[in-house]
Length: 328
Image (cartoon, rainbow, N blue to C red; front, side, top):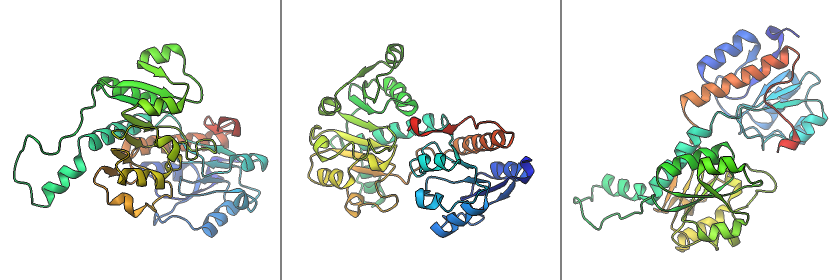
């Protein structure tokens, strides 16, 4: 089918340059309001489109895929994570799934370090105190935090983002440890100055900072649960810029309130935008609205990957970023 005739439905607003290029190449239906599609609207798109371009807000499960039209042949996800798409069912129905990997690592790692600094140096407390008008000037004992240099950082998931975090942590003088499904190559360990911990429990017990950088899969759901967090030092902090479901949010909140953990920096949450209200009240927690990868450069590069995947598919070839169940 010629590219210009390929019907493409995009579920959210993308950068203007990306939408313009998509419209030049394909028969595109854009979401002009940027309002998340309802389940019925998303199902309707699956019935009519040749290609769907969803985002992480769009849950595409087996029931929805069962109602997909015969023309649907590609789900070109705008994002690297595909835990919101039933990839196995899509494959069974002859629908390819692609994503946009390798774009967000540096931006997400930057935000991971920013959250470490924000929590350890008490940004939220200092800013709130200043904004309240109560600040009476400098004091040698006010808002004492902790330096990053010399602290032990445990990275949970040494993929592209975890590796980028390790490189930045080295620059801050941190001691880097990691736990991963598979140990990385020795040369990579040397380059990252990182020590492998086969036991996650043993790593957690020794760390000053734990950074969550693994994807959400059935095996990583609540990987950081109450039992494991109780192994951590009361002075330790948790940073999560990956997926909220990896951490038991209720258990984390209880421990932070009880002083069993020193703080947390969270960019993602277990239940999307429904955040535990008790978590919002804590001064030792920095919360961000899933903005770790929110740079103009990243969003455009993601869109370019989507375009390449669709165009390659339209030309009769396998999308370069095709996702298969064995990768998950």
